[in-house]
Image (cartoon, rainbow, N blue to C red; front, side, top):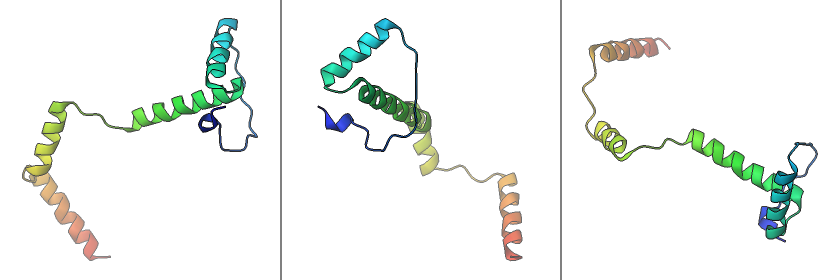
Length: 98
């Protein structure tokens, strides 16, 4: 049995899903190939899919051109605009009164 795929947390909550006969047979076949129970296979698969979905949503992926523009802006930032200079001045004044 593949011990890496087994959940490491205690299980107290319950999840249920209705699937077609074909889906259940497919899931069971995959579980059998991996040496897992159907429950362990489902939990492991859902966990991996959830982690991947969250990572994809939270990770910024840049094209080569995006990277070039980003690095250029970091290495050679534009001069601060008048509005930015005014905002910085207001901030500094506000912080003096703290």
